[in-house]
Amino acid sequence: MWSCWRRPGKLERCPALVRLIARHNEGVASGTIKGNPLGEIEIGVIEKGASVGAHVLSGAVMDPRALRELIPDFEEQGAPLESPVLEDFFLYLTDKRSFRSPITPPPLKNHGYYIVSLNRLTVGLGKNVRKPG
Image 1 (cartoon, helix red, strand yellow):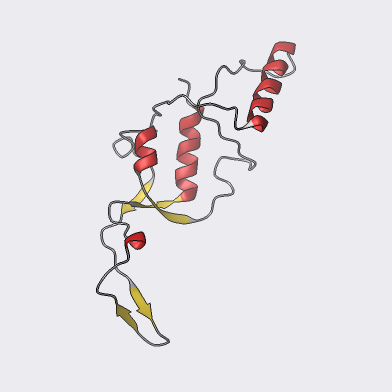
Image 2 (cartoon, rainbow, N blue to C red):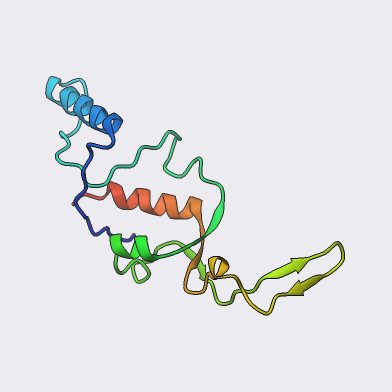
């Protein structure tokens, strides 16, 4: 599995997560929860499903900039990417035909991005977050 490059973050904008961490640490201190107290959290994932990624069903075209910032060598580490976007084109559709536009509007240009299964990507990131360190 691929490892995560950790970047410090601030939790003051996420009071629910701060409360969950405090409750966990209190439970560990009192002995009602097994495990170790959580220190300063840099990356937090809250999942309501039975497993990480259980609610994620769709696919997407992903700009890799944010993932590259978090995990610079995510491609070499085997991140679950379906394929790179190799070409872009814009089609005008009618009832019976399609016409290729001579230009692709800039917001629709995805060359250099990746086609991903959000479920597989979420599961991979979930495993990454659970790793110690």
